Image 1: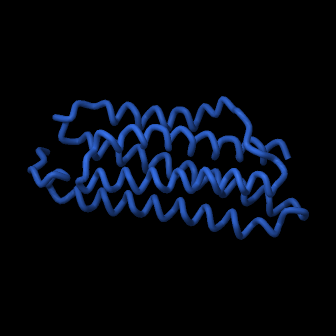
Image 2: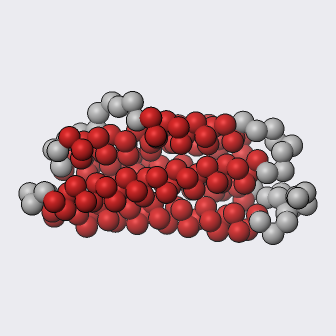
Image 3: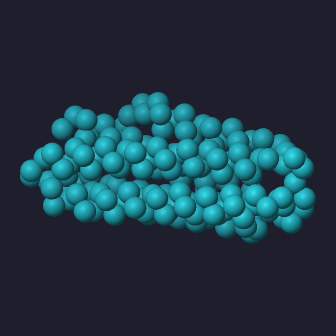
Length: 164
């Protein structure tokens, strides 16, 4: 039960911090391709936050405060990539890579939660819900990969040539 609570807290913490950071990034990124990705990611974070709280309540263990060092490090890496100079031709790619790292981590957390719930015979009916949320994370991961592929054609998101 304690491990399940720790995983719930980590998922909630990471989504909460990412939602806050992405909200701030939305104002700076404008309406281009990358800006649209940030808006999409932020919308997902808000939906995921509602989902994790609802699921946690269904499990009888609402998310609580936590130190969540791994989640904090992931969000800080995104923040640091966002703070690279705008003139840096790889800035957008660095942000996308950090977002991918965060998504992979969250997918893993959902997997750990699914394993915990699967072992608990009282809460097994929530297993499909957890898998659905994990699948939504995977959708966001794929969205970022597509975004990287789109900007990886030698052009920056604004159509300007990227240097090697």
